[in-house]
Length: 209
Image (spheres, rainbow, N blue to C red):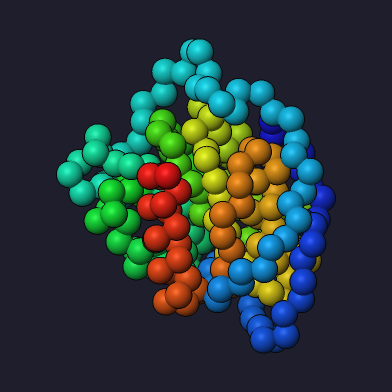
């Protein structure tokens, strides 16, 4: 069940010429709606239920759903690098107003573990400069390698850099395959207004369908 065990490149990627001179480690970006084949699922235990002896204290949302945490329709868990690009993208979604709790995975490796015990979609940037083996940020691996956290994941959204070629948004491919959840959306670098609209509306539909 360790995310670090899956190191294969994401399948079905296409190179897009519009992003010719982006930085190596993307932290957010512009919309791409092309359908891609996902990596083959990897069997994991404990994906559909919380482990029997899970006594972890759930973390406090960075932004709570309107009406209080108990009124939430679901949650978004995200990781952002020191550039804060993903954080700004998430803030612009105003998910609390839509009834969605928002949790942030700590940036500092030695920070206390974030524990989430409600259905959530995870949003992550793609690291590695095109090397899919390094696509998932270590902090995200740590979060998902905890069985209690992994039991509640329901989908993944990833950002990336089209200059990464087949590894564009590969963090999403890897998490979707390892955790056996749908890859809901990918966007490039810092995203667009259209990306924000699609992600916000899509999350509401996802949690209320």
